[in-house]
Image (tube, rainbow over all chains, first blue to last red; front, side, top):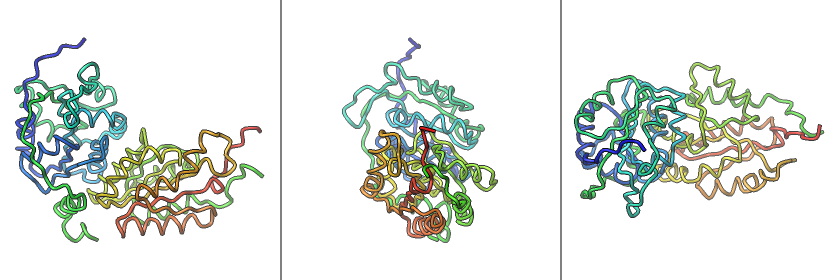
Length: 200
Length: 176
């Protein structure tokens, strides 16, 4: 069995720390807690919040990263969501988008559905999968110092970049952003493309 | 008779329309019927071809592409329609444009019985997931159908699938 350090990182603090230096980065959040975490860190017009489409976050990130090569794209999602779209890591590994970073908040549980264990609890090593499918940089992050070292990489190092951040299952207040899909997508496009192109 | 290929170059017609529509991201799960079109797109410097492990990846990717201001297309075979259903929920809720060009199996002279269930429910499954379906069985009409579908998808922000009939694509002869 791989080493299993005690999980100490808190998801809200992790996401707030990751998004603090976001600049003009574009952010896609996986359904459930990652969407709430990003909203709790501060609602932003460059956030595209998912409330469904489980397994699709990384691929939405790829399409966005290819369309906006000058912008950094961060996908912030959960371990259950990532496990449902594992094949997308292989697809991203082939494309090698230099501006895409995928960050999994890995609490090793399905948090929205009763805290059942996910595959990462027992066996699956998501960072290992990313490495094996061609990501240029990949790591499992389990302490504050390591997180501090990696945050600048999410924005500046040539990707694709992957990080599984091990976080606790401690309960946090639910912070809900807009859940109206057409509103979220229109707001995102208007901020990114301007009103002319967004609604052409 | 049998697996006689279509006399017209319908993949070339599709390529010209995609190019004129400024489609930049071409995602696909390989299919023999789309082989020529995939090659034409791969040779075009303005287009980025992305091979997928499953069709739903393409649905998600094209949502991201459009969020970022680029148009895309999904090339696939009817056997992959079932893989897309959950992701199509997002397309419907967010009213993302989606253009899918689907070559049919399991409908015309099919040899493989395992292709029948998805092939026969292709249009209904897509329509139930909120996708507008155009079916084309005449090689000379593939171009105009794809053109209309692309207009509908990108101008009206809708998911549109063109089912390219097995009659157009041709079917495998196993007992040569």
